[in-house]
Image (cartoon, rainbow, N blue to C red; front, side, top):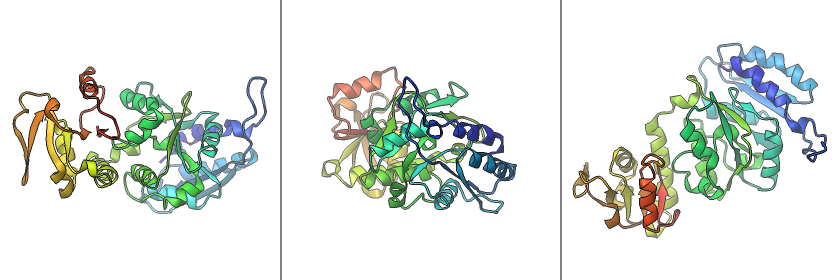
Length: 339
């Protein structure tokens, strides 16, 4: 149900600089391109379908091709289902993903098209601004401030490129086999993309997408346990199973997050855990017991790398980060962040 946002969303589309490719005295002309809006109504019960039909002639008059489709069912098939159908009915060489409840800044398509054209096969994202301002401030700061290298290294924490900002070549999407039609389709696609050797890039500069936070957002319906299972499976496949140096490793953090990570692993992954490490004297010297597993908990200075870090960044006044730095570890070789 996106009717309440459609007008603002599509007004923003008409403001894209690629539709007005004229040079100013200060800037070169943006690349001219033809735009196509492919919208798929997956079981809405409000006025979304009528609004899309109302907008179709206006967009076409502005030079935007329009193709709209609908499932016709009363129950939606989910985000992956709807995105796959929208892409299947479209014809563009490039795919720019637009959630109906978000807004694209005028230079979004221009900036991402230039970035994607310069990086064949890349999944390209952008910085966001949050509305209401200040919503999920820590999450937005992390997503906006990661380095190019961290987009890859931090992928086990969360989707490092926010789905509402994605832009890619159609060929990149096709090679990935489309979205899996289940929850967490964005996370699953990103990990599969990286596993195939695909790169990640976020356009720098000002935010290109207004990312709205509201109670009806689909993201709220994704269970934490499901995200944990997919993130854990991705780390096992990309790190534990791929590198002999990870035959044994330490989980840094014997609290809830570390224990949940341990429980989410396969039996092979659990057997690889040499120890948990922590700074809490109440935990150090004891054992974590789960089913048949008895894992010692040691002080972090007694632990052996490599590590999976299950302590959230920015939550300890810098103490955790200083402890990691003190060991002279190399991210991506000696440790990965998971939280």
